[in-house]
Image 1 (spheres, one colour):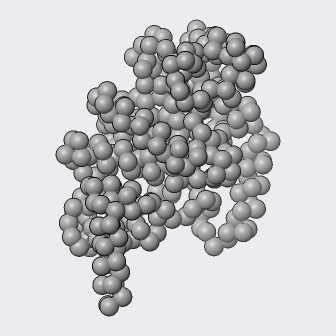
Image 2: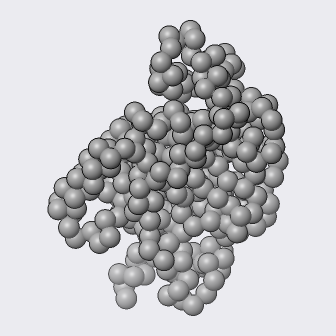
Image 3: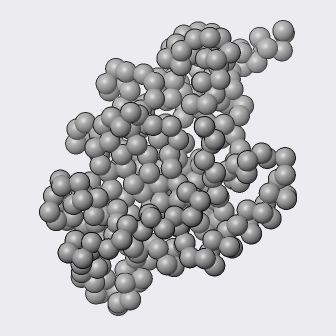
Amino acid sequence: MARPLRIAFEGAFYHITARGNERRKIFLSHRDYQKFLSYLTDALHKYGVILHAFVLMTNHYHLIVETPKANLSSFMHSLNSAYTTYFNIKRKRSGHLFQGRYKSLLIDADNYLLELSRYIHLNPVRAGITGKPEDYRYSSYRAYIFPKEETINFRDLLWNMVGKEEKDGPRSYREFVETAIRDQPMDPLQKVYGGVILGGERFIQEVLKRLNDQEIQKKEVSHRRDLESIAPDIDEIVDLVGIQFKISKENVQATSPYKGYAVYLARKHTPLSNTEIGRYFGGIGYSAVTKIGTRIKDRIDKN
């Protein structure tokens, strides 16, 4: 299966979706939701990403984010790796938690950000979990209509897009969302272009031109992969080590020296820190990751 195209540039807006492997639940307790939000907050601060909306469902989640530094891939690697490690350790399991790579849609914020935020905030209503979006605890909706409940400021942009003064933002946004419960407007995701862009014709043409210009500069990159980074993610590295040694991914993650090769390659070919790599492999310490990588490098050099 072809790897999905990643479009990365400074100031881009994205709708992110990540689902549980085989549609299994990724949140089994209130503590799980809390831990995910904690990791999300850490990743936002670490990578300078701006969060505009989110909803966490039992087997998937939605985010709307803005990337001033064009670093979506690094941000998502950090977030999903951290939560997967926590979940696996807590549940005494190993292997994939998420179904493949996350899905990202580049958003024309001027025309679709407001509509898309409403769409994800109404997920619990469409799923029949609640009749009122404000009754669902695991979304950013309450932060919009009861702003004193949240300390993270990710509301201003959407409030302004409603077209009201700031003091009227919560009420106006609530009316905008509740109208959709009654009127059931068309799903904005039905307007996605090429599976990766949600925007008007002019926006789409601008993005395509940007892609063409960057492909000329990076013509050695096949299939126009993520323009910010073409490094494989850690899951892909583990898969490749498993293929090379004809063992399962679980054995790579748990067995020496195969785990050592995966650690070495992750240090060499991914943007992840030693801490993130160690967390992925079950809690290896920072210095241990360095020692493992050095040992494997020496072994390779001798051969």
